[in-house]
Amino acid sequence: MLFLQTQNLCKSFGVDPILSDISIQIQSKDRIGLVGVNGAGKSTLLKILSGKMLPDSGSLQIAKGSIIGYLAQDTGLDSKLTIWEEMLLVFAHFIKKESYLRSLEEKMSNPEIISKENEYRDLLGEYSRQSDDFRESGGYSYEAKIRSILHGLGFSSFNYYEQSIETLSGGQKTRLALAKLLLEEPNLLILDEPTNYLDVATLSWLEGYLKAYSGAIIVVSHDRYFLDSLVTTIYEIERTKASKYIGNYSQFVEQKAANLEILMKNYEKQQTEITNLENFIQKNIARASTTRRAQSRRKALGKMEKIDQPLASLKSASFSFDTDLKSGSHVLTVKDLSMGFSGQALFNNLSFSIKREERVALIGSNGIGKSTLFKLLIGIIEPLQGTIAFGTNVRVGYFSQEQENLSLNKQVIDELWDDYPDLTENEVRNTLGNFLFIGDEVFKKVQDLSGGERARLSLAKLILKKANFLLLDEPTNHLDIFSREVLENSLIDYPGTLLFISHDRYFLNRISTQTLEMSQDGVTGYLGNYDYYLEKKTELEELKADSIILSTEKTSKDKYLAEKERQKLERQLLRKIETIEKEINELESEINQAEQELLNPEVYSNHELAYSINQKLIVTRASLEGLFSKWEEAQKELED
Image: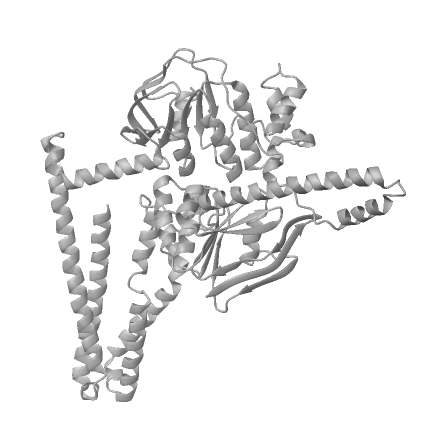
């Protein structure tokens, strides 16, 4: 089913066109990725599709009765309610219907109503219809759905019922906005950078949820791993136009490269043809014997449809990391490191070592202290205990995801030149030019730069340091996909040592040769990239689950007994859930039977019998609600 389509959409800001002749189609089950460099117009197109912005021209058609849900980039919930109260707003219709059902039950238990045969029969019919609709539309499961999505998006440690949204961070408010949107289940999800502020575990959950989503999805994301996992169609916005590619992001890259090669050959062929025509015209236009031929070729040149120069051959960010000093074999040794704030432990007993030329990825859940560890390594803060030792000739370079090393009131050129005063103006401008700060852009104030521009400026400063050990904290944040690829290629060729934090799993796979998973109680090392880490971790978990006897040979008796006890409790919970589900089925059958009896003329004409059955029905429904609550508690206990 065709859900949405646009025809020849155009949008300009001032005299600058942003989108030109955009024609796209979205079917009801589509998974579409929207890609392009920063500033290409991706967010503008999403705002037009969601109705938040009007195009200058063109048409937008949406199937009748359809609902569109839109999550803007870095836009969080602004509410004075608690988390739970805000999520319940999505299900106000269920809460209202619950209240209506309770009022019907109260009327049905009134002896005066029971004595009025026709009125009571109509009341029973209304109750039966409303109760069936409530059950079939999910009225008994909406609270469990709220808990499930909040848990998946990383709110399991929060007190849903008391935590005020006002007290949350900006990233948490953005995640909560996403949770509310998923609960609303619109026909079309329009998501602008939904993976911001999500750790790796939450990203994996979101991918799985969106794959099974019943509606259509169009998403802008710089997370190439996420796009590979989710989308089946790519639209690229380039030079204000939209081009469609079938497949995920990696398949798009292959198709784009093949198309680019053909375009480049055609462009070069046409340029040669144009040069030959211009040379012929210049040489022959003044000669009487050849002027007519020259004029004919001038007309042909004027009518020729020019091929635009392919973007890959135009100016793009270009840089490489280098060192001017080789470090010793042992670069970093961390032993028994612990850190916390205000008496609250953040992590304990971190011990690991890094050797020269290793590429080490540091991963772990949000809030575990990865960025804090980096600040400990560069000496901004002191640990509670433990030691940090750098090897011989180690020179550290640090990239902060917050870009705290930038002075907002400085101009771009001064930001670089003040740190490296020995450079000539030409050298400074060349360095900035490699990071796309060209012409008067070098005189812009740092505070006026976009997130991507600030990231590029920080990288420019880092490159000039020529450090042989780089600490990179989310280096791909704010960079568009193409800048990320330039950064990856430069780090692959870097002759020094890397320790980096990233939620970009595509980046992790390309760069890392070793993965450190950080937890409150230390780090676990895996020799390999992110995919290898996932494979190895799954393998270890399966071995642990399937081979308890073998695992006990390597662990203490206490751990073995604890595992047996855990499995015993798990079996008990599963049996408990199975018993509750059986009781729920029995009570639902009783309710259905009682409702049918109440519709029987022999019953509703007997007021005492009808009253008795109705009272029993009210008690049974209350028992059913209690069983649903017990089932949810048991499920939550099993998940924990």
